[in-house]
Structures are given as C-alpha cells and as structure tokens.
Image 1 (tube, protein in one colour):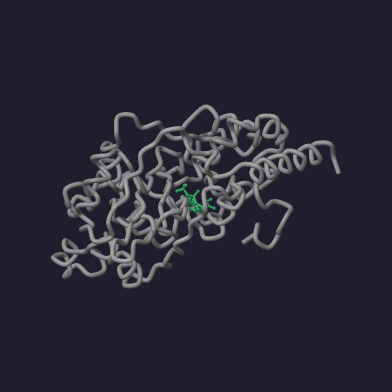
Image 2: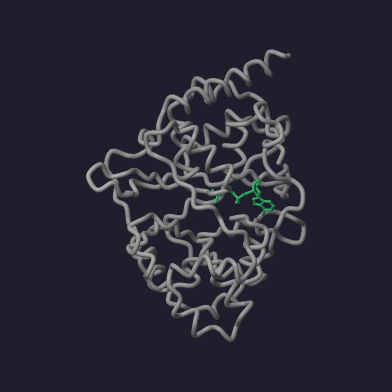
Length: 323
Ligand code: ATP
C-alpha cells in the first residue's frame, strides 16, 4: 500500500472513531428554535409557514396519536406539483389536501415512499449518519422519550449539511490526511447526469428531480458549459401563493426569485483532493459541488450524501458502497 493510501485510510479511521465518540446532541447549537407542524394542517398553509420563518423543512406531529409523523421537505411540495400535473382535474382537491395526505400523494404518483427514520439524540453520530444514508433521507429527526409522560418528543432535526460542517470544523487533523483526488476515489456521479437548459420549464425540471430522486439539476448551455444549478429548495418561492401556473415559466426566471442571501454554487475539478473539499465545507455553505473541467464544462456532481457515504463506508462494506 502506498503512503498516500495509508494516510487516506488513517484519516477515514479517525473520522469514523470521531463519529462514534460524538452524539447527535453534540451537533446542535446551544440555542435553537424548532417549528413543528400539525399533520392536520392544509398543505398550502404549511408552505406559507415555511416561507415566513425562512425554513425549508419541518417535523410533522400527529396530535391524534401524540407521535412524530415524519418530515416535511421540499420533496413533498414537488410531489404535490407532480400530482397536479398527472391529475390536472384534481386542482380543487389539491387546495384542500392536508399534510396527512402526503403519503397518499406519493402512492398516487408512484414514487418510493421514504421511510420515517429517526434517531435518539444521545446515540452516536455515526448511527444518525448511517441511518440517514441507508434510508436515503437527507435529514434525520432526533426523537427522545419524555420521562414524565413516556411520549415521544422531537428534539431537533439534523441534516447532512450540518453533520459535514461539524466534521469539517472539528477534525482537521483527520481531514488533512485525505489527500486522494476526486478522480482517484471516484467521488460523485458522472454517468447519466440529469441536466436542464435555461429555457426548460420549472415543471420539466421538477419532473426530472421527482423521477430520479435527486435534489439538484445543473443548468447547462448547448456546449455543456455550466451556467447554474436548479435546486429542490428553489421550488418553494415558485409556488408561493399557490401560483401553480407560474411553474410553466422557464428555469431562468425561477432562478431570479432566489433569496438575496443565496450563497452561489460551488464547483471543483476531478483533480481536487478531498482535503480541499473539506476545507471548502469548513469555510462555506456548500450543499453540493458541480464537477467541471478546465473549460467549465460539466463532468459530474458530488452531493453531500456522496461525501458522507465515502467517509462512513469506503473499504468497510463494499456491497453497500457500490450500491
Ligand atoms: P441533498 O443535496 O439534498 O443534501 P443528497 O446529498 O442525497 O441530498 P442528491 O442531489 O439527492 O443529494 O443526490 C443523490 C445521488 O444522486 C448522489 O449520488 C448524487 O451524486 C446523484 N446526483 C445528484 N444530482 C444528480 C444529477 N443532476 N444527475 C444525476 N445524478 C445526480
């Protein structure tokens, strides 16, 4: 084994031990707020609440059973839009749907229903990560049991972004050992990339994201040069106020509705090393990296789940890693 291979494995081992030693509680800030929505709320009202509070997801609560009922995310709104496209005569009913109907909408449009996974906040962080990756969830609720009532309580929700930020900020001694390049470790997806053009409609791109179960689509020109990335969260401002007809407008227009504090898109090349990617994660608000070549043309995409999967499973369980 070459010294660089050895160092890489040593870095991964250090990161895995770190994730076993820390709990999900450790990732939470000292003070935070949590907005939980009642499952009986109308879907269109839930959207206003997310927008008013500047959030993109919320745990759901079933007040009939006093139990956690899953997570509301931008994927759910995309599913509602997909439903509206498949059953245009149902528009009056769409207005009346409650959050509790989201699972029926998934079934009606034929998408895979996400398992409602959760984790206890004092379990090792490694467990939260591995549950999230195995269920393909992008965030995981921390559910505890109240000592007095014996009932479930949702403590918070942690995302892949927050976990990777926590790793990047606290483990430089290990991430600095990850000197292999993106190409060498084959990080990310390079085949069958879903892309769109500025003139494509928002509806077309939502359809692409729902069918392929992805949360971002690079926007390219006819030469495959990367111009931007349309993300699942970009759907929320498009449907504000129930204006589903605006979804027929082009992606270019929808991208103009991004909030003023939008952080921009991040790119890298296949020659960039994983330690440099962790450096970027440490310093910036990165949700994915678009891999480009020296002519700015699209090569691939590295999602946060690709990075987390590599950190947790590379060399451990080859079957799972390659799936
Ligand atoms: P999030 O980015 O919302 O935190 P995630 O990290 O799971 O979630 P996704 O965009 O859903 O990211 O990516 C899931 C898988 O699909 C990853 O392996 C990623 O490389 C791949 N992928 C992402 N975007 C595309 C795309 N446009 N075309 C093809 N594959 C993609």
